[in-house]
Image 1: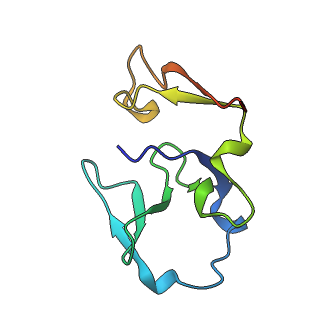
Image 2: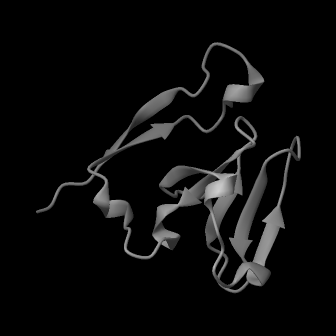
Length: 102
């Protein structure tokens, strides 16, 4: 489990400015999705989606000037049922993470 807040972007809209050579590709199960991690520190940076191959899911913690705490509420999916697999629990939201300042 990577526990990242991910946002979506079209493949054509993303440009890597530096460090792309430090990324490591990881694929599992159907080997359709492409998950990328930093080979130095191990953080999940982004992935090319299996359900929407023309999109990246991007870890907001890797974007300069963006924090996971910028989002007051984040839906948490069940992590088992994938939208591309079919079935009755597609993309099922299991709950929400909410950030409140104390």
